[in-house]
Image 1 (cartoon, protein in one colour):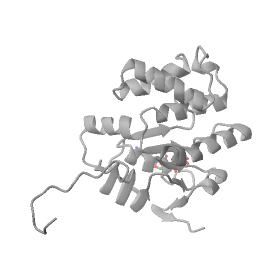
Image 2 (cartoon, helix red, strand yellow; image 1 turned 90 degrees about the vertical axis):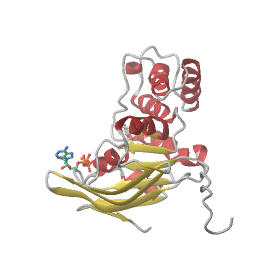
Image 3 (spheres, rainbow, N blue to C red; image 1 turned 180 degrees about the horizontal axis):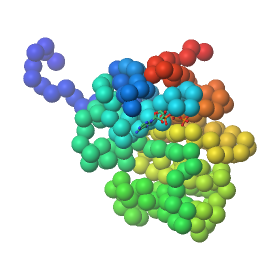
Image 4 (cartoon, rainbow, N blue to C red; image 1 turned 120 degrees about the horizontal axis):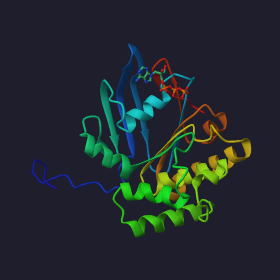
Length: 237
Ligand SMILES: Nc1ncnc2c1ncn2[C@@H]1O[C@H](COP(=O)(O)OP(=O)(O)OP(=O)(O)O)[C@@H](O)[C@H]1O
């Protein structure tokens, strides 16, 4: 294209977009600098783990990425879009379409079936009811969770957390976040859920970002960062 024309830059395809890019992100709470010009990029097909002592700000980092906490300065791009100045409604749409989140205790509704728990996330993101239920059933079958259970409360710890992973995947997000996803599990289930999570970037082309104390998860990741005194540094291995 000749230099200096006004032709719009072509929109990059979603496969080229970097699911997460933090640049110069600072965040202070109660007078304490939790993030000091943090830099982190997570590409599709890769896994990243952030470790740090209790209270170092790992969950706060994820809260910033989800648009639930507003940094003092810096840029956060999710699926190619700047989120730091996004309106609440637009951010909610990004959160439900582009980001999947797995919490330590799953945060599922115990009285609903596993299928309904997973399908509900799809419905909230705008999928039709039939498609949401079909996707929920397929994901649960893939992740080896029974679709016959009448309530999620009756699942084992491992099944419960695999259901939480299925719920996070229903919108096929480019960015999958997890906060201590194995923290509430026994060693056997911890291994199974870790195997499952760290296989997802290659299987589904998403970027996985996990914050954890679990050393085993750190060792599985493609990229390892440590957060201390507000400084987020990549650990060479
Ligand atoms: N809204 C808030 N008001 C005051 N302090 C806060 C607020 N949010 C977070 N903090 C403090 O910021 C620090 C970081 O919290 P955060 O939960 O991000 O740490 P963490 O590294 O995830 O810890 P853990 O590993 O124990 O989960 C903590 O000392 C917490 O008490």
